[in-house]
Amino acid sequence: MEDAGILALYFARDEQALAETQKKYGPSLFSVSYQILRCQQDAEECVNDTYIRAWNAIPPTKPTFLGAFLLKITRNLSLSYYKAARAAKRGGGQVEALTQELSDCVTGSPELLLEAAELSRLLDKFLRTLPQKERCVFLRRYWYCDSISDIAAQCHMASGTVKSSLHRTRGKLKRYLQEEGIFV
Image 1 (spheres, helix red, strand yellow):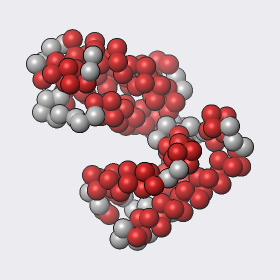
Image 2 (cartoon, rainbow, N blue to C red):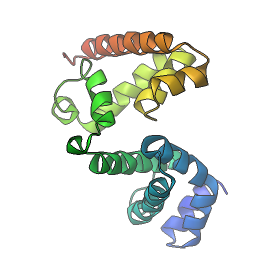
Image 3 (cartoon, rainbow, N blue to C red):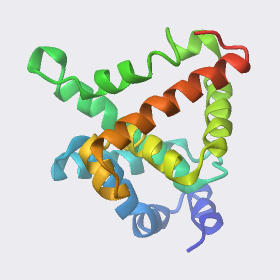
Image 4 (tube, rainbow, N blue to C red):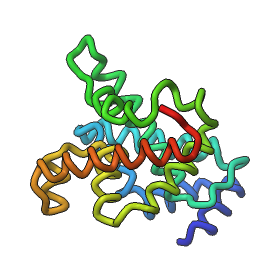
């Protein structure tokens, strides 16, 4: 079923919308959650929570891209769950480590620099300027939270090459944001 049909079911408050969403997007949502949590049960719970959040948000929200809308919910839920389950006092820290890697590009809270929508627009615009492989490496690291070794294997690159690519891309992002008037 196409996204427009699924959205129509949500707007009609037809529970079939959840079944169609699961059928079309379930595997992708699970994959994103599992990449972050590395636990099947936790990933399944986050995906189920995604369906609940989508049901509660649609309507009034009418997402332009249903898949991206659902993936964002899943990713945010997974990161929140990961952070709560692996707080620093329990020896975690991957989310904090990834945030630290990007701290040279954006300091302070992004909300203080720009509204979230503006920052998102700038990041989308920046990502479109990158070559496909460089964009893939950057997104695998900072969106899907893949490890350097996983990215290296997926992209057929050496780990050192992945690290160098990420370093250069963060530098490009920093310069891009400065050109857009965000000084870091």
